[in-house]
Picture 1 (spheres, rainbow, N blue to C red):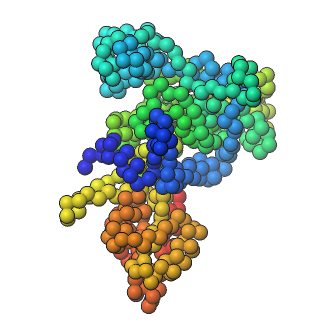
Picture 2: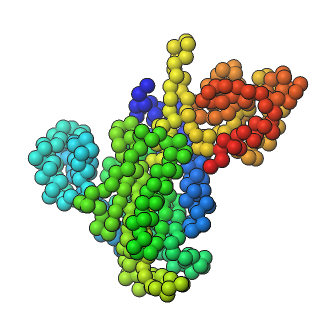
Length: 457
Ligand code: ATP
């Protein structure tokens, strides 16, 4: 069974995980709304991150910084000057393209274009006679750098003094609040500050469904450590991220580390590794882990004039900490887990049924209560009410039991509980496992315990 891009997207839309944004107005290009199941899946991904990166780690804490930040932040971070992509227009059909993406697609991922100068990219495109993907002509403008930050105005005046930017990453919030958090919570280096929140980038070529959008959610952590200990922490977090994905059921065969070459590295980065996933169109970045050195804190110290050094309480040594940053997009993880979970089965009547094999931890709904006849409706409602205090539970009364099972399989509900005649006599219920389709009879307490155990992370 081939998991094509079209199949995955069609299933996400059909089952109401994702809708086109502003659909009744013809949509707004590359914006997506997450339906109830989509929100549940996203929330489960975020909770799983929060649990392992923050809650269970004694060193790490979480913040929520404002999306709108003083523009000086973006001056210090280098985003105002340098956060741009190489843009080329096709003179023939007027479409816009990222030069590095043209190169990447042409070379089937052998060349990334990252770290190249504009001249290098222009030469490569000319020498290889790369065509416009939309019209096939070979008539591009020279490269212009296009800043990816969304601009807006704060207050009633629309002038340069009131210009503010929607944050293109959550990371700067952690750098700006480094001292506040360190002092108020008496944190000792090494420690991490994490954040989950929206980021905005005016991408030149968004696309591939929710893989690249202009509005997305990030989960980032800045881990502050002593210079000299950074390499070790980089190795630690790189593996930690991969293990996190695997524990949640990510398929090992579709995942790999890709270390950035010296040429590709940002000028401030000592090392960067991407965890890549084999998306339906090929390998793509899922998670970036970077050793950002002391670049950001130094920049903020220089621009704000505020001291960003840390004094070791034992040795009195003063230094600006180094930072290791694992940064991931919630929607990319969503796409990955959704693709990995997708499976088809051909039924005896020749129909195809889709089963989503989500790990129970991530499954939007954990249990469906299916009474075999309407007389058991009140009892079903009682059970739903009780179970939903502990985990997401639905009740489904309509259609044959086979249809109802199928409906739950399509959205990846790991457990279906049926109420039948025997339930009334001996208070046992049938619990069916989505993946093995095996059924057993248990009491409600046993069922609850089994489900709680299956969603423990
Ligand atoms: P890319 O090379 O794909 O543009 P990037 O290297 O610029 O990504 P980072 O700045 O490292 O990305 O951002 C960290 C993470 O945020 C990425 O690994 C990805 O998961 C997510 N991300 C970045 N840009 C987008 C986007 N436009 N849409 C959805 N997720 C994104």
